[in-house]
Amino acid sequence: MPQWLLSRLFEAKDQPKPTFAIQGTINWMRALAEIINSNEFSDEGIKLVFGKVQRRARNELSDTIVFENMLMAYHNLASLNALDSDVTHKYDICRSAIISWYYATYFAASAMVAASSGSKQETHTATAKAWHVDFAEKSLLVYPFNLYLSTLVKKDVDEKISELRKGNKIDLNTYAKGLDDAKGACISYLSGTADYRKWEAEERIKSSKQFKDLKVDNFRTKAARELRDNELRRGQVNFLFQAFRYRGKANYRDSIFLSYGNSYEEKMDQFIKDLQVVTEGFMRMASIYCQKRVAKGDWELFVSDLEENTRLSLGAEVFKR
Image (cartoon, rainbow, N blue to C red; front, side, top):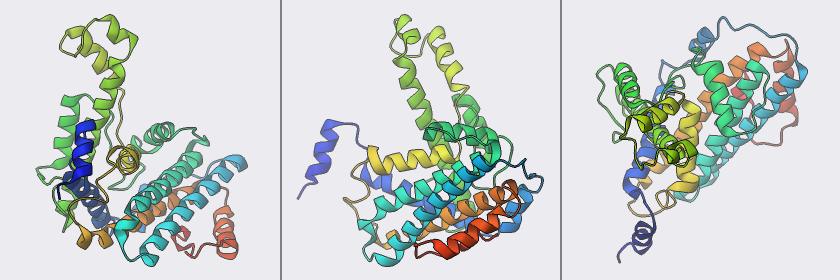
């Protein structure tokens, strides 16, 4: 029988091909997990990156925000653990698993921002921007979470991507089976996210009064290009923006690709495990940073309290660093 639903979606909107979308989804997470499981990602390496981070002046309110956000990250990690261990057919829960992965990442990053500047952001985009300034641009992150771009201007992005690749030609079509594969796929996803955020920015510009005043419908004129490039120069890509895009594909944009068409069942079990590995890695990094910033002794009190009072089945080992 023809794929009736897919045909209908193609008729109604710009629908990505399910096979391509799910390959990219699985392959990026496999690449991240491959790196985190390697010697290039370790507690010792994380501590080295944060070696010069100093404990801040006592700030109980901001520290409370740190602990609250880390609790929420912990709960989402526990959800991932349960989805992996309690469900046999992983296709049934893969979309929910991505949402748990995203929110564990988001809350852990929010804790880092609170530990850094004491601020509490009101939107996911604001959190990603604050994290960019506080961590990405200050080289206070561990590979692969430290990959970032501070512009969306195409020629500048292309130069930076080429610099990061160092001749590595692997892209997201590759299911990583080693570090070179993994690094190439991660850079490919960084580049793809830059393209996506550039498209988003251009769509916003086209709806602006300044663009409409030019009475054009593209960026071929000098005035239109200047308007666009001024906006693109302020653009950013970092791991949080990549995670936000990844969650959006799963939860909104590409409605069909995670549960329809060609079967990738042989890779789906590994995919759920990879989501866990990447979540644990990110939370380890966040925990080591936050522990250095909150009031002396409070991190130990936080972990001990969780061990005694949490109703989650997952232990608090991820916080013991």
